[in-house]
Image 1 (cartoon, rainbow, N blue to C red):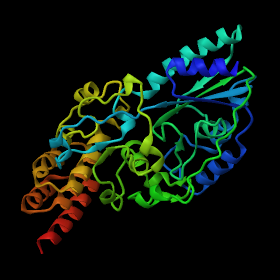
Image 2: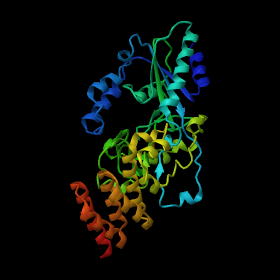
Image 3: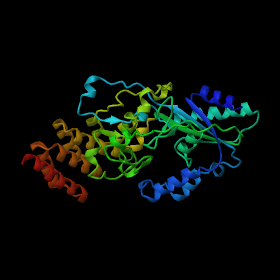
Image 4: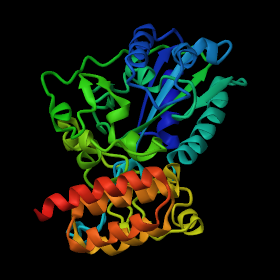
Length: 379
């Protein structure tokens, strides 16, 4: 039956499949509690001790659970971009996982087909519960114990065939299946992901401080990005792939065969100025059925300001000046910071002009700080 289950998973579109029992993930729960208590999960209001308890107990997630079927689907696709885009300092970068359709929708449809097939294999109604990164299930713990992959020091699951460029999904079921063995692999002495993280978010092997991670800062954080981290974020406007790009395991990773994850035009290196000029309708139309919706329009515009400031192109001064006048307070704050970072006479003039009419206290403070920074460059 286990072989039939695996053939079904591959036929449904998954790239890797493993099986583990429904026993508690005790070591993983202890590690998650420590991260929580150390403050490394701050900012996720939903990540509570109660959730940590539940996510590591499959038998509490599904009454009668006997097995967990762990699945992985690759999203590694070829990047399509023009040379002019790659050399343009008015563009940013977006994490690979968001180049195509929203993976939640794609994978859930495949999981439903897979679960229907399980009942055919078992010749009875099989009880299941599915998870795709959006419920109280420890996906990485299940994938590790099922032999799908092993923990990398960047806290990602690394697979032998597709590297870390995979989405994880789990099916808890009342089918009693023979479990697979965990892989006897690790990262050895390699610390490239730790050394190359610009914000030092990987505070120890296998431990990521969420509050410093560029992915968190550009997606989950809804307020102002800490000033000390902005210069370290480069031109990332949604997510970050640095720790995966430098990982040796990913050098020979197989490409995805899932057409829904193919890159939408311009998604890898988006033009930043049009992002600043978007209204809500334009945002919804451009990012329909895209993971990028999670950042919201204001969040994406905030990130675009930071990227333009870090790129330092004087051609960004005019659009940033307009954002400083016309956009929401959160965006105005970061537009001011970007103008201060770019500097120059035009940027200073725009900041002084905006200061005369600005009434929002936080924006006023950002403008004053930006003027001080820009003035240093002229000395």
